[in-house]
Structure formats: C-alpha cells, structure tokens
Length: 428
Image 1 (spheres, rainbow, N blue to C red):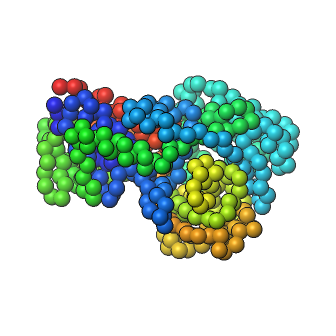
Image 2: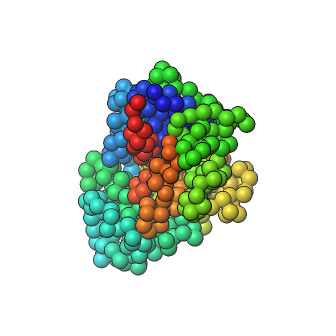
C-alpha cells in the first residue's frame, strides 16, 4: 500500500483517488475550496442547488458512462431532445440542422453548402493528428470561405479567445465540433444528456465511495509546497506542516504549479508558465419565463459582448428557467474587474434584447461566478509543448485540463485523465 496525496478535488482528482483506493492504496485529497467538484461544483441559488458553471453530457462521453456504471447511478443519466439557435445581428434563427442552414438569410447557397460539408466531414473524421499543426481559423476559412467564416465564426472566436483567436489548434476546434455534432438522435435532431440532480449527484456518489474505501478529503486546505529530495517525492506542506507521502498528484491549474513546485527544472517551469488561460465570469439568471426554446444559443451581435447563452432548463427541467450568460476573457481584461452588480446588469440587458417580452419581474434572481483558469488556450502542436504528466521527480505527477487536448473540457475528459494517472502508479 502506497500513501498518496492528491492536490485538487475536481473530478480529475476524485476519479484518480477512486481508482487508487480500489487498488488498495491510501489516498488523501487536499482542496483549497470549501467544496469538492472544481468547475462542476454546485452552489445554493436561492434554494436551488445548481452548477456554478454549466455542464451537459454528449453521446461520445464514454469515460463518464463507465464511471456512472461503477457508481451504480447510470440509470440517473437522462437524454433529452434539445434545440440550438443563432442570434445574429438582432434576429433569432433556428440552427443546428440542414433545413435551418438553408433558411438562414445571411449566406449564399454556395457558402451554405461549404459550411454544411465542413460540419458533416468534421463529425466523420476520426484522426486529429493531421490537424495538430494547423491553425483553426485558417482551416475553417479554407473549408467554408471568408464570407461564411466572417458571419458564423469570427465574432464567436474573438469573444471566446480574444487575442489568441489567430493562434488556435485546428485539432482542438475540430474535437469541439465533433463532440457536439455526434451527439444527435438523427440528422435533424440533437440530443444531449444530464444527470438527475445535476453534477452534484455524481460528486456525492464518488465522495461517498472514496470515504467508504478509506480515503480522506480535506477542504480549505491549500497545499503550499511539494517536498522532494534526490529526485524522489517526499510529501506536501499544508498549513505549515509537512506530511509524508510516497506519491503526489497535482490536478490544479498549471499556472499554479510553479508556486508549489518552485525547484523543478527551469525549462519545465517555463512550460507550465507558457500555458495561457482564459477566465470566465458566468452570470446565472432565474427567470419566470423562457428566453427561447433553445438549450444553446450562439450570439453574434455588435452590441453584445458574449458568444452565446445557455438556457439550461431547456435541457434539465427545473422549477424556474435557468439561463447562463458566460463572459470569456483573460483576467487582465477590464470587464473581468467589473463588480458583480455591473456585469449582471449588462447580462440582463442582453437577455432582454434577445427576448424583448421579458419584464423586470420575470427576473427572479441573479448570480455571478468567476474562475480565472476556465479554458486553456490550445495552440497548434499544443500537446508537444506540455511536460509529461509523469515528471522528472520520481512519484510526482502533474496534469490539468490542458492534458485533455485535443478534446475540450468536460467531466468525461476529467474522468479519463484522472484514471490514466491512477494507472501510472504501480500496485504494491
């Protein structure tokens, strides 16, 4: 039996802990937050337990399905037919199927054909390696043409990725298209999933399983440093106290790693520092009426600085209508420094612009959640720029959502990487 410390109680850390405990190891998890779950954690939204940041399940999320089976809650995964829309320059359009594309008035027929062909081919492609070195905006524009790129992609990219828009991996963007594009009931009907009770249900079950297997979770316990000697990990420092461990797994955002591992080789530290991230301020509204019938509404409007809204209650039925309005931006962006009240008020004006029939008393409650490292920026040949998960220090493993590449952030990918790390530690 090895004694193992895991830094971070997001799904990646929890999945790793679960497998290691089942293998007979002793595992203790340290989490700086006051709750487990990371970006999948819930909060009390006026009596409703809801995710701080929206999540949904797609048909390719096999690693999540396997974990749900292991925890005996697979029957609590529900699939629902959903709709997608596109709000373009003051007009609301259907989106996400061939007929909606044909009816869209902003493109000529040839552009529509090229766009549809690109979407179709992206869902059928199985290899990403030949897209690894390609730049995403150039790849898309070659397929669909400048007109279609300007109408359908340019502003979405600029509002999601800002200064990094022209330096994104085509493989990474392709994987995002494929994940959602293959989560369909038919060519005309999208189908997405949710866990009854939300992500909290999964977190409750895996936390219970971890504790039943003898694992420990320490909340509000940030790790200050990882100790090692002669290239062998020795343990961690928490609240000024050294605790001995045979292995240490870090799952916190890579930009934090140099703080707790300052003595790693400088070239390795520089690779961690070079991973850029986009933050998010996610405004959540509780409404008496729906904004639209769509789960996902892409937004491209010169008067609105958001790439879209997610009407979560159109996926998971709830007592009130729940709408997420995400602002993606670097922490250095002026809007990231706005007060919650100011950004909520702006988001409210955007929602009312999309649906002018909404009245003041339709807005029951509002909340803003922030996370500075919501989205790693994956540049061409991104994976080759990352240090190996198994570091040069024996017994030390480091990963975060950057290692999902070319896949996008999802609970399923967190499970995958967490379990892969657990498998790297030999059974005693």
